[in-house]
Image (cartoon, rainbow, N blue to C red; front, side, top):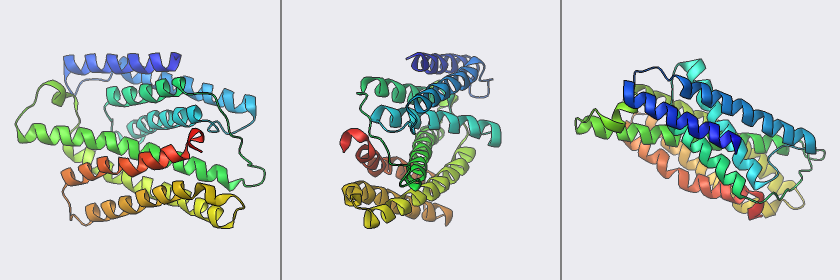
Length: 258
């Protein structure tokens, strides 16, 4: 809950700063609070995993915390490596929602047999990273659509003044989708091998099907955008629709759904 408070304060600070200075203003304390919250969440996940000697995603709460951690970490990475800053108040709000939802879930755990199937840890890590990338692209797509609508209607104030420009959002959106495709493909391949060769693997077949559907739709959407067969706005809308099978696959992956 301390992490949730820091992320919530980061969102409020960034909103207030951008409202006063516009989208070109300095991120100020909101960015540093986001980084501080991410470091604190890293410590919490590491302490939990080390204390129980397991990967900290063996519970529904742990998976949501890991997704929130990955989303915030991805936003920080994009800012430092590519000078592309997703709206901090959006990322902080989404991370707050993940942390708060995790706090409302039970503490059930499902131990992994990592000593028997160590690649399962890679499967889980790749899936979580893929969902983080898809979530980041969904937020980026939502910002793109809002900004596109503002330009079409010649609206430049209010919430529209807090959003980045269209061109960098379109470029980084394609890159995020491309990275998500590769991570999800890695996860699906390992999961498929486990399903068809493991003793109890078919229990995970519904999750594998939904992940495969998500991967197929993501590949088609990315290919259309790479060939300029769809506009930036259509690509953004497709990214939002892609959340439906992705969320279904994520829900089926949660230990509480097994």
